[in-house]
Image 1 (cartoon, helix red, strand yellow):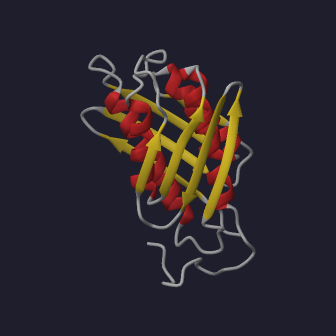
Image 2 (tube, helix red, strand yellow):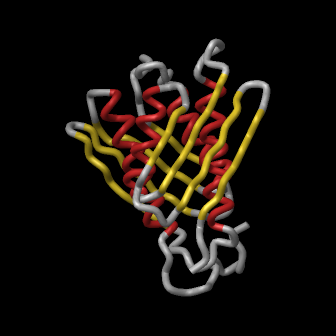
Length: 196
């Protein structure tokens, strides 16, 4: 099987990012964005998705967390898209429920070649560490757009915002793991014969 990995570098006036992703890894992650809670969420995504992820970002955190969070998601999505290549022989669809204590999240993923996301986390709006709550769904939407994936992600219940956000990323990881898994064929899983 062809190695499904990608390395992406992105340098702008706001961020300087280097990311390496292996879709067929073991869940090893080395993530340093400068935003502790974002590192936590992306590490959880890699661990439970069984992706190997190395991500370093130098962002304009003196401004705020938005550019760093957004750009890391964009680059991760680009790496997923590149690693999937033509998306031959993949399951394409994935779905999962993930509990974390009192929180329960649901994710459904279609690696359709079309980027869009419906995200309902119902966070209180308070920052989680140095990551503003409003940027968490924005990360998912940015990831979906650049990965060319359809993502539906919602938290069904939960009282603690940390648990709500983390269970959402765990559910997303499990759904992505299922969607990128190979099905033993070389077919593109679409009647259009393309997912690009």
